Image 1 (cartoon, one colour):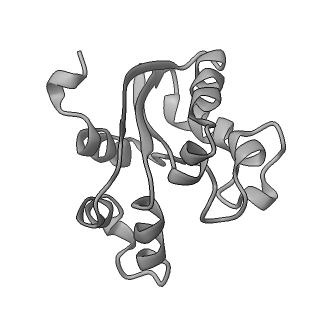
Image 2: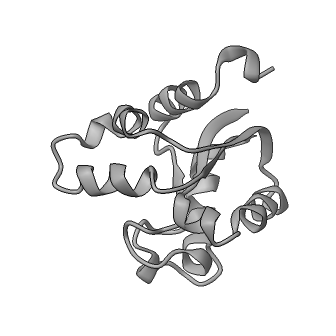
Length: 137
């Protein structure tokens, strides 16, 4: 069993798509083992996206991720990281197949509805960033 972080970003949350996205996750066979809704502060967004600090889009990304509520989830299943990334589709929602989450609910490369961990070490950091050990039994 593998665990990964899934976020429904502010664009999809504000549009009311968080329930449909959670249902699509469950329909895929991945289990949601923890979930919470929250609104990030700028400092929290900067901490979460610290690996992108030197990139030109960092400021815009942090501003976007703090503009409204998000839904944070821990997903579990065999090969959960790759399965969630396939379900999301490519980062650029304009290039995402229409049957992927980003193809259905995203609008561009930034407002792409969801986030997912890209590797086991990233997943460990990201899950821990949003969920304390006791949140995950």
